[in-house]
Length: 227
Image (cartoon, rainbow, N blue to C red; front, side, top):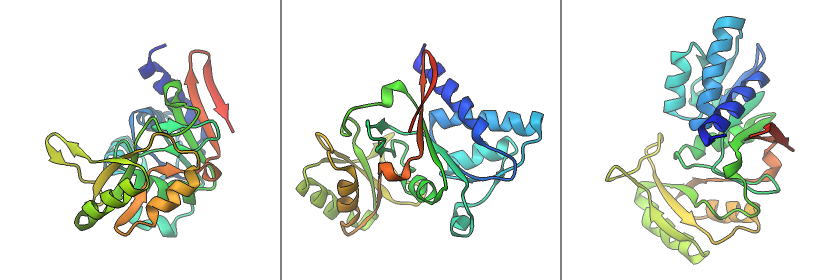
C-alpha cells in the first residue's frame, strides 16, 4: 500500500478516538490532515460535538473550514486537554519522537505534554531503532540563532538554519528554526533537556516517551497500536 494510503488509513482511524464533549489537541501535518477531514465528516453526519486546540495556523484554518469548534492556542492554559492527536517525523522503539518537520513543534509539544492522552499517528516509514535519522528542529529567538547554532554544534550536532522558498523560515510564533542533525540519540530525554537549556532556545522537537500514550502505525495489514 502506498504511503499516502497508509497515512489516510491511520489518520481517519484516529478520529474514532474523539467523543462528544471532549477538548482535544489537533496536530499538524499530512497524516493529521485525514483525521481533521474525518472529524469534519463526523460532525456533519454523526452530530459529533467537541472543541479543538490547533497546533498551527494551518490546522486552525482547516478545522474551521470543516465546522470544528476551535479554542485559540492562547487559551491553552485555561483548557483541560482530554486527548491530543498528532503525527511524528521519527519514532524509536521506546516511543520517543522527533517532531517539527513543519516547524510547529513548540505548540505541538505544549499541547501534547498537557494532554491526558497523547496518541501519535504515523506510517511505517517513520519507525526507527534509535532516533537520529531525522534532524531535531530547534525553535530559537531570531536575535540568538547564531549563538544557539554554536552551542548545538558543541554538543555534537550538524546545524543548518531552515530556509523555505529561498527565505528564512519563520514559525507561527515568528521565530527561526535550526535543524540539528545528530548521528544518533541514545538518551532522548537528556538531549531534549540539554537543548532547552541553551540561551535563546524556545523549544525543540524531541518528545520523550513518558509523554506518549500510544503510537498508531498504518500498515498494509491495518492499523497497529504500540504502547
